[in-house]
Length: 237
Ligand SMILES: [Zn+2]
Image (cartoon, rainbow, N blue to C red; front, side, top):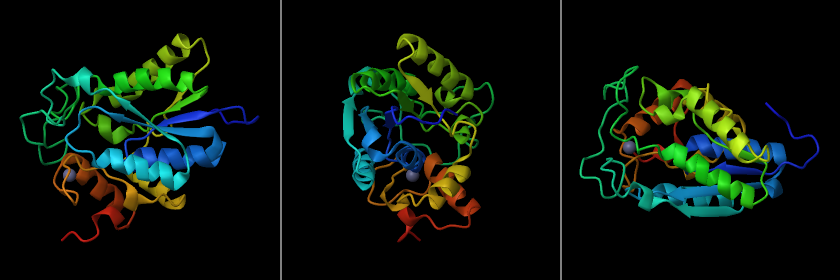
């Protein structure tokens, strides 16, 4: 991993409002200083605005500027269950229970090439803001089986190469969690004082996390593996 040595680097961090990208933001603020970090949240027509509000709260917590991109029109033709206009309910159960196996189709919450579009759009904004680093919080649990192929190591490496080439070497992609599990990320976030209570992971947009969708179950397991209670789940049964 490249470390900033001359203070010239400036980082744009893709912030979903979840705990992975929040822990990534904490790491980048610690490395570069908050004056050299900007956050980007992306509205893509998701079912609810909880994660956008969470990204705003997280950026405010770390005192970094927050930019917003609206890419919803790119997914207007998709019937993905994660989208506001999707007809299907959000599936319950883990990705494995949803049949996400090696070589199988992505899960129904896969938004078509979403992360590829996000990374391309974020790269464009990063260059406009004179950033030299684009930071992406993909991790290995999301690629278990083939749930989200646009979180895989091979995909991230290919996008990193494309971003480097397409920016004439002005911008590099960093995805330091790509080989880590969500439990590893909770451990790092805990050590660095990440305000987990501000983050939102659930695919549903109720007042409290549903506790039944795949990302809720992933999150529960990640905290349990660290012997911790999820502060965002307090008040649930
Ligand atoms: Zn949920």
